[in-house]
Image (cartoon, rainbow, N blue to C red; front, side):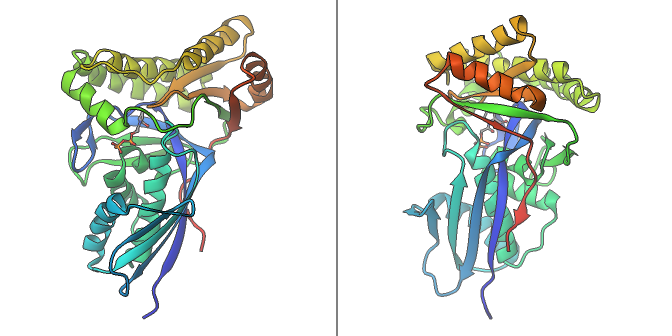
Length: 324
Ligand code: 2P0
């Protein structure tokens, strides 16, 4: 029998209502629901081929051989579902700066889930793919879909998955990514969020605040109310970072330039009447939600103030697709 060699593409997503904390660390069941926008500009292409002649899994990332330990853990789930025991060759190309708070694990595990499941002979629905991707990295559950996506937190493996809110957006919005630092972050999301769950005295208030954020942001999206959507995203992100500052040991992901860019976004919004809102993930880079009509104007203002920073604009992106 010839082996099936499958390539899948998945795009990153940026949460407007953040996932920050696990209820189950093995199955990756979150403490709270979240909602994201999938981005066009950043994605991962992954090819998987199971081969009975291999004696171990092989993992190549951007042309370099890497330790397959995490990949093997993930592929074990796929092998179990498919009832196979062959090892696989996994070849992944990241069109995202790795581990820089740009959610590369989201596109990585979504692409791996899609490619590996199909290469193993499984034919999974998007819902099943979302659950599978979640086992690799929580945010990957959302990268199965394009546009606005909600991850329903659920309470076990079967009930925790993402659903599309609006996949093919006719709303001309996008995001500017300010690349403050593309180095590997100091504290992984996994460690950061667990520290917060275990030690922040504000954690229960965060969880309680999420239902309102999710309900209100979905109404804002439906009404094409950019201002309300931006305000919710910005304040939700700052609440997430307040958890980090309030945990033991306390930590934060900001660099001086991150704060300067956030201040500048507020300044442009207030004094130059361009609607723009920031959000920040587990890294120093700033993502600025804006409307496509304002993107060039905003980019030139930001580039004048921060000539040392690389800014790139991206439109909303699509869900997973197979390239062969
Ligand atoms: C999110 N982040 O909703 C949040 C906001 C970062 C800040 O999901 O441990 O790589 O693999 O489930 O998905 C990044 O964390 O963490 C993340 P794991 P993940 O996008």
